[in-house]
Length: 410
Image (cartoon, rainbow, N blue to C red; front, top):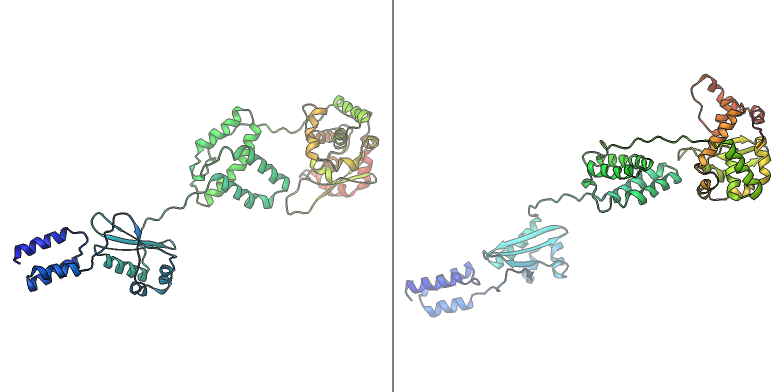
């Protein structure tokens, strides 16, 4: 064989993708020693030939010898097929072996498959993780974050009724609008448009409630570094005049009492009782009567503080009405249901107006303001006359004398 024939053979071998550089060197070495075509052919024939791997990734097997070179904690994973490595051949002829173990990627690359395996095993030994761009954690969805905030931050420190009102507001007005919105996707324009919807519908009170509930939640998200700023910081909310309550007129009071005497309707019984005690609707279930006194646990208290019991003496007007009122029955009624029936008997009013009626009537008959405040459960102010507030609270004799003024024809 001459040199031109040898070059031609080498050229053809280089074009053969299944022939590695190491195999090509063996062929050239044999050729230079013998320059015999038969010897060259035999050397090429006996050289190990690699499989013709395509660009598609496929599982690769390791020999016992290769497995023995792996770290013991990795070797078991491959032996029992808990982990599978895959190999693919790139367009440039390089073999790439790779796998992921516990989130760490291991790989080995070479134009020679055996060398790629060796590099892969060395990569396992070093435990080196290829550099890769760290993915930023996804921001939570707003509804999920809000519920976590509500149950973690609010629920432990508010009364159950208050928490339930927050939950109702969330399910009715917040959850549907913010569905499928990540917390970092919500900007000021989004929230302003949301509030504007309630303003347009003249639901000003609801708009205020939503603002007061959403704003601290977003502030919490700022502290958690989920967002840079509170999107409600510059939101414009509608002006809302808080209704302070309107006592029922004497004519309305007379009609209510007449309804009590003629029908003894259970809801009317409860409304008349509230009218002549000044109790809040939520305090009704705790009512007890002891002689000339009515006691109830105050609804205005913070969670974690002791219950405050308020005592109101029975007025002459109420004493006459008790003939038609089954107190044991009305305290067992659902007070929310009672509230829903106010409109039926007192159009344009709500249960809190009955509390204002009691306070107004006390003032009209001349009962001392400080004593009325005690019965209503108001806190003492800093005026000079209120300095004797505590003294009057303990003076039951004086209170019983004052309640006698609450007497008029109805």
